[in-house]
Image (tube, rainbow, N blue to C red):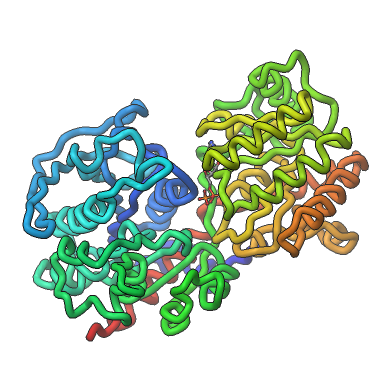
Length: 517
Ligand code: ADP
């Protein structure tokens, strides 16, 4: 369970001190996806909710994202602005048209960078294969984001960048935009959501960045002969954060650092881990429009049963199964431990102990293996291949148990959504799962900290053992109901995480910028 920061509590608990201690902070948040505009994963949830969390703490936040085709299909208000400019990309110039939107329920302004050649495409980053011009697309986006920030009427204190797609922003701010008054005094913070995706491109893409070849060296932008955009961000940013304290430690070593452990260890003095919050305006069983009957900790039995009936109908079953419902929602990729799940289904599908529902998208191999498992145990295993936000909410509400058996997990959001919906997570002890889920033991039940079932070894037997412990606990109605009530009472909202970001921003603002050779 996370703890509040006593200093910040004192500061924020007394409004008069807010102005005395902190100047109102201006933040330019640059991300490649943000809910509700465009989403492929947890990054979008964070970039869509953090601005609101920061705004509630007194920050003035401007969010910049690309204007993908997807953003126009959500019924959101998106308007043109007068702003348009050219961005040099190698020897060409690409035109950016700037659109404006609003994050629902927040004061933050959203600017969307439009260029149809770059962003009017069916998906954000490509399909089975990445788009071949992703370097060019995100070099263009990174520079356009700074051009937008530079055209605002008040200077920014912090430029907050997320993942490899924005890795060039800290370098551009230091090397090309020092004469821009709205940007020059800002400090840059690079947040890592996943070290496994680094934006590695062939060396000639260095020409597209417009930066001097002298930066293409092993200590700055180069990685074994290639251009590495995440590494660039980690080297040039004034501070680095990632999405949980455990992951912050893991990435300073092999294999968590995915080759950049040395870079991260060398910057450990400015590296922090802050657990993601969840957007409780979107994920709340008391107000969720995707579930048939709202519920709280007081009446979750009825609410979850209604969700099960709806889910059964959606999956083509005449009635809900009486067995415990075990769910998994997520990307069906190696990181998420899908190979363990495939093995688990083979071992437990015939046991009659549970009904399994899996919702996700992945590569053809994993999707096919899961479909085969479903075909082997009809009525016991349902697999839905696809990305369906509404169904993800319904599954979380209907399930008793959710599986997060990740090989590695920077933070993980599905276990936090599960807690809020009274669904008990079974997780592997890695990254943010360590920081958010407490194993159920007689002692943790007694002291009220139990929130799930945790296993250590990355193998299917360990997963099966943890799930069996969960199913055994489920059969003790009184124990289970107590556990559900306990986890539903936990607060994982942006309130606490937003304060930690503010603390980080304040520290970074007061420190000198990183020296660049
Ligand atoms: P990651 O960012 O590594 O994919 P997270 O757990 O941090 O993992 O976030 C995943 C987010 O994407 C959650 O909001 C989850 O509900 C959502 N999600 C993943 N797969 C699907 C899917 N197939 N349909 C709907 N939502 C999904």
